[in-house]
Figure: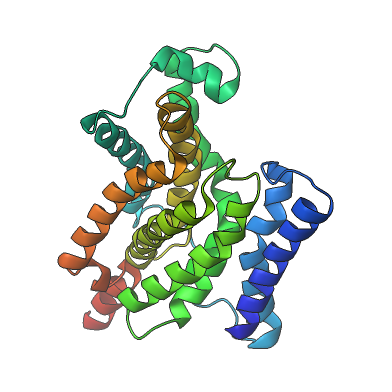
Length: 278
């Protein structure tokens, strides 16, 4: 596990330092983000193949589209619900200044119909799933399954590590001109709440691709549209937006924990149990 963490953090933080601070390049550039995003997967591949030589038996690489279709749907639509809830909370507190016709220009730099924006937003997570495998294969597919004495502890520890892995981004142009301390304090519970949800999706679906889809939705839907809606149009500070996004996610986490759903067997375990019983 130590080797995995050293490689994951070393590759990512090293890239941030060299690209962002030595060469002064923007970390908003997707091409710059790509090697950082795949660092956890590279680390997991190296450890599984050459360090522990444990192989990929528990990597949960199968799509399992038939068995896990309900969880794929949750992972796909869930970010839309979280975004809507975040906007709704902002409106309830009188913070929202919404101008929907202006959103396409803010997001795409072009005046396109809102219906096409909606279609592109729903398609983006599906298209981007392989990119987010770079993180999920490492964090959820490897670290989470080797951390803690139960799924809740494993999800929390993985969430803390995952949040720390992101921290240097706060000091780059990736987050823009923000209050660093408040951003760190509010981004951490947001990432940890997301980690618990992603942990549940992996455990229940039995496929790493389900959290990949949810993670893609978080970035491509919540991340893409919360900025123009809540920051640019409404003038809300980024750290407050973190809280607005965290609130519905934390509510989901409370529900998962209170109902014991994070402890339930996965589809794989259920199928194996039925097979043994037969």
